[in-house]
Image 1 (tube, rainbow, N blue to C red):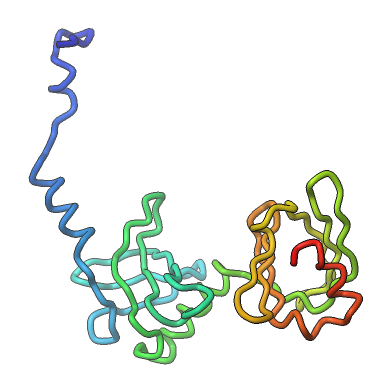
Image 2: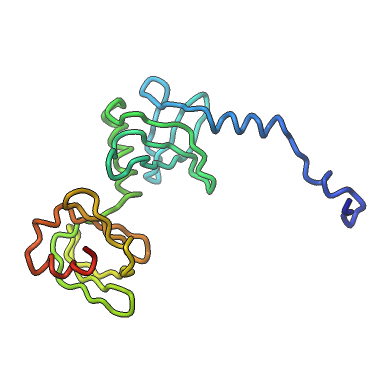
Amino acid sequence: MEQGNNGQNLLDLQEFDEEALKRESQELLEMRYLTKENAVFRRTEGGFVSLSFGGKEYARVGVYLTFPLTEPEEYISIREADEKAKEIGLIQKLSQLDQEQQEMIREQIRLRYFMPVIQKVLDVKDEYGYAYWNVVTGFGACRFTTRMSGDAVVVLGESRLLVTDIDGNRYEIPDFEKLSVSERKKLDLFM
């Protein structure tokens, strides 16, 4: 066996607690639903959300959508706000919480899943495997770059498009058919 500088067996330095590992594994597999009866969400001074659940206080939690594009108000994962983002529990349906708590959760979802709607496509230029977009969104004029690969523009239904730029920012075109003919031609590169 390898020896450390102080002569201790290296395996002794890394204590292995099999029971703790089993408990943690069991916790990860357990499905916990957060309801208005067992969970209390509060707004923090910094504009985040805290949670009281199962006898524990979480000073800050993260809100993640399990099905962000198809069911944005169902099966919402509430996680610890550290780098591991360990799941605390699920909100089965947002509508089952009190109105004030629903709004807190919706606000956190809007911040995490910020996705401007493209209202007008002014120009799309293809150069060296990248597309340079010039658009107007609900938040004003915007320029961004996408790769020309197949995953930059994804069709989410009959005419709904999701555009993802090289930085991971997402933009939505709710109805491709409502764009003008010249705007649709600019998107032929991706269709």
